[in-house]
Length: 111
Length: 114
Image 1 (cartoon, chains in turn blue, cyan):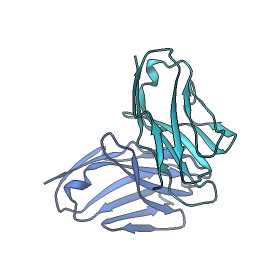
Image 2 (cartoon, chains in turn yellow, cyan):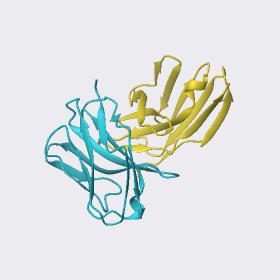
Image 3 (tube, each protein chain N blue to C red):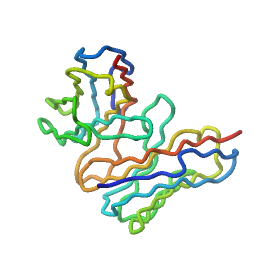
């Protein structure tokens, strides 16, 4: 059974710093991995999707990497801003459409 | 605008009173799914549907029903709600198997069962 872990559960960093969020999964037979952002009281916003054949994806200040063999993904946020404060979730999709989620990292950017 | 719409957004009700949470998507997606989100447990899949009239159980289906009579709609039914079904519920949709496209989520429905 696939298990997804995100450590740490919470992270606070000063504005302007670069930071890395971690995601690990136990079964490397994945179809893709998706990073989401969740704001309090809101739904999930898809940030980046990495296909199993890819090593990384970039969107603006965000860069997500995938090392399938070791069961790891990272989300790199450059030049953090207070508006980046949110909970970040990673989810892996295996050969069905089902997503298995981590429990998230709650990020706080300190102005 | 492409979106997944859930209603209601908030609901407080009592044990045993049947309720339905609606979900509608306007992207002609084949795949739709329901998740519940609980503190410390993350999001867990309740039911999913690969297409019209095709539904299957996820990880936590007990106490829930779904139907998929039309492609755009995927309602979640709680026939006899209980307090342990108090949670934040999300509906999601995607193009379906074979597409490497992201899943789209609704804004969530917060249910409180007293």
